[in-house]
Length: 478
Image (cartoon, rainbow, N blue to C red):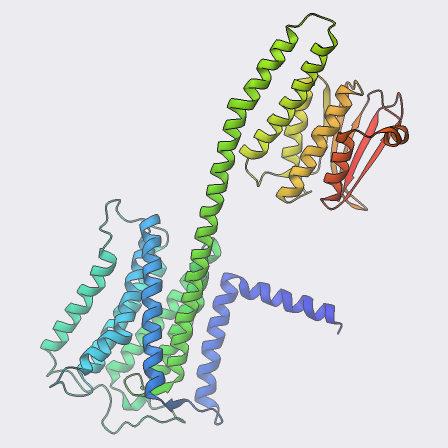
């Protein structure tokens, strides 16, 4: 197979993975593959005893969860979506359960091992998973206008405090979560060592995360939201981490297992999504600032330069008839007004308008101003980026203006199409025409030079066909 074909196939696969559904499917594949290999492969080691690495991962996961929760809270402040509030609260609960609650319980004396130190983090994690499931199915619904913003942080604190007080009051009735004979192992699952309620809690959390993964993937396919795009695969890894914790109940030991790695992978994906969300937000803010500045410049040109040119033109028209300087002043004002109005349109119009629409509007305005008939044949499938669109608009304005002022044309035709050489813009008129070779040899005007330079910058080429008495044809290809 040739390298080009291999590159094309790789590019197609990567584009598929980058879609919301594809990214979530990749998360499911990784989680399912890791879990299957750990269960059935006799050559892979499931865990290592490493208290320091276990502590580092717990700390990193908690810090990432709190950071992402803060960024999601800022989204909630901007958009007031219920989904963002539930998501932020769920991440805060998971951060508390992963680090704060576990180590706080271990610092309390008089608590029987395997009871409160297991059931309290499990309860908080289950509630955090419930919040994430609620976020997944909340969609884009909005909260009340005057919802209390600090509730994003106060709510999880109240949940943790309530769960802690309730389980502390019933600490003597709590069953032992892990059998005393349980010893972490690196080569075999041991779900039978865990209490059935512990397995039920991990299984429920896994089911919740996996359901949320599917819901987030479906929503991200419908909404252009960078964070939603990464929530699907992140929840998939979190769900399979819970499955691994059920198979290897080492979450409350000093051992590092595949569940810990999958959980950290979940938080890393959340961090990537949050960073991309921030980049998208600031990029949008920069675009808004640019658009506002462009509109301000357009208003200043319209209210300042254009009004002054209109006044100068009116004064030039008031000069005695037949005075050469008066005709030159009026012609210069007309050219200046055309340029200023073109600048106002370029600054004040959206940058994503279709090329055919922009060219049609430009040619129509010139035709109405100079009282010539206009014919258009524009293929809407022809596209161009903003810089190309601006250059093609300027070429159209210059060609139509030359046809009217110098060629005395009565009809102008503008065509936009695809041909064998690519995309093509043609402006044809029925004016007096001119000798192209003679004009270029003597002293080509700035208008012709400007059109050629703009065509080269597309990148492309400009061809001018004209003959005295038979009009002219200006063709730009790119």
